[in-house]
Image: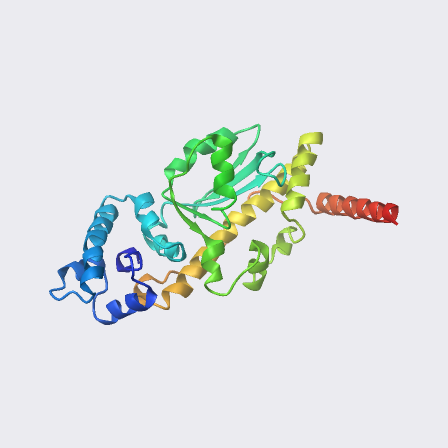
Length: 290
């Protein structure tokens, strides 16, 4: 889908792009070969070097530079070309503040295998492993996960990046990841994760640090991995829906793969005990205020 994109040319929006497609100019080379440029002289003067640069970047697989040219709402168009070198990415942290907290776990799913990175065990390995991939897919990762990773490792992730939070908004889906999952029929209650959220993930990590209870760590990893496994479904779903608005749906529409197995199991009894203790503390604090 990348080679059919014209919205990265200054002054070209989606309506103008649709007109180019309707006029038979369906990819970059077709525009450059057109004997009568369909754009105004000023737009044409900007289009030619931009498309020549785009072709060169595509041919050399310079995905970070090419992705930087795309409007953020069109980042989904990277997916078809880069889907075989993809890292669905999500982090969990030791607290809710980026300034004072650390990464507890990172999960990466590449469409085949799940990889987990745990603070105090193998977290440092992530920095090298992530270089194997060309494309990152996250949910709110541009604002949270990637800046947190870059700060923690004192590095920069130069990958092409699709942040599904922004992509899904184009389709009318807003709010948090779990809310959108539920709207699309993904129910984490089947994995005993229905009541686990970011705050409880912090508590699970704290429980593991305090007691060494691997059930707490395994529950946290199950939650973290569910995020990245479900991102795959959301990415395919969004891609297929958005491609339907183009003339290229038949060429690029993809079959959604079956959900991957999560190699860790959440401990329902432990989660319920934490929730019960949280509720008891809340009731006590409420009573003290009165």
